[in-house]
Amino acid sequence: MVLGALGNLATIRSFELASVVLFAVALRWIWKQRNPLYLGAFLGASGVFVHDWFWSTNGFFRVTFNHHLIGIPGIGIGGQIEPLSVPLNYAFGFGIPAVLYASNKKWMDQTFGRWQYPLLWLAGAVGVGIYEIPVVHLLGIWEYHQRPGFEFLGFPWSNFWLAANLIGGSCVAVAFMARWANLPDRAGFALRDETTWKGLVMGSFPVMTVFYLTGMLQLWWYSAVTPWVNPSPRPF
Image (cartoon, rainbow, N blue to C red; front, top):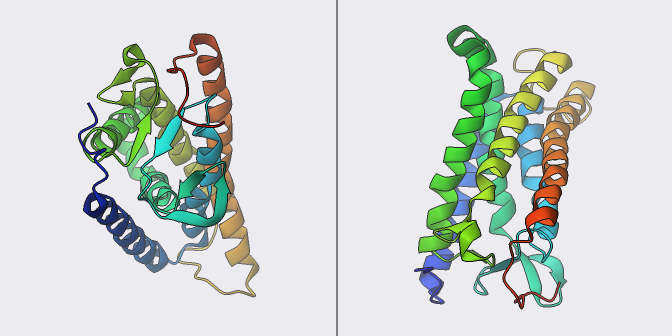
């Protein structure tokens, strides 16, 4: 039972407000790092909402969003919207872990060695459950339409390894890109400085690439098991 799917406008607006506040706090912290690559990773993570638009369709997640959510202006097809809060959550949920990992890579190497990679993957799997199960099951922000055997408290259990790949892959990819970019410490931001644009571009590409590759792998899972309920509440 999805406890929050009761059309509670106050719940939805509280979620959206929390999304804006967390995004603003995270962006301020990123800005204070004075590292264009970290800013690129953060903004790149917000930009992967484009994948979410496709992933929500009948052939992937088969998701419907609470109708009270404020949509991104100009994005709406067949009555379906992309909530404005989604890119804010992606930036915080995928950009911040990647930046934290990249900025502490030496410590991770010294402390965990090769074990850091399976631990990172496990942290991603656990983290998505901690976040998304309450969002879906309690708050009713969005709803998956998959058969009961493929859901746990309204949350597709296949998302455990999907998110583990997304978070773990983004963290490792951004860390490697930071090493390859070799930007000066606290390089800062200047519109006419090539270093700024180099960092922004090289920071955003790893997260976007990981989302593309992970989504492609997940397509084989959905093609093989077809876990959805029918008829679909979505037009596409």
